[in-house]
Image (tube, rainbow, N blue to C red; front, side):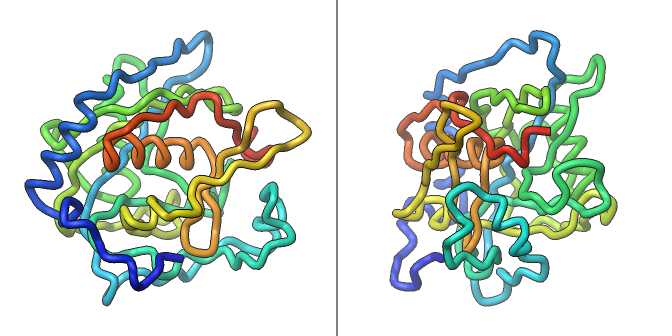
Length: 250
């Protein structure tokens, strides 16, 4: 989990300077698009907000031990699957998918979904954000766009980074969202992150992002890793070649 003796860098204090920092870093990024080639197009929102460690950060729906046992490289670890202690300062909104959904139930996700016919991808990301969390952001909230990521389930995902403000009112839709979490920048930038493991089903490395006492995998983990490298740190890392765990292939 986030170490309590780590101080938040001054450049990460929530406000106009942080927004300018993210816009500048994202503006220098030459994003990598991926052709659909018969796949469906989806869009997700990486929403930047503030977070308060003293009043937020509970986790009433930690990943089950059964789910943790499915994660490559985690079966014999002491990970509990909870996301307690991951807040404090600038953060991004993450959700756990509702258990009543048809696919990927209980998994970590960014707000988002399929782009409708004739719909601009940015509009799709904003629409899905409204439908899932009741957060309505204007197009002017856009800070930048990250690389596309092609999933094993037949989607090409385009991630849009949006400025959500200090404390947007969030009303999660119970049919789609099990829980909502603010995951701090400093949690995304842990020294033990990212992790890479191998699986017999693929020659591509599986990327894992430690969050609290759990792990987030691609596609969400890949997007978060590139957000860290590009938007927060101002460096670069391509993530299209990083693999998903087998349980996320369908």
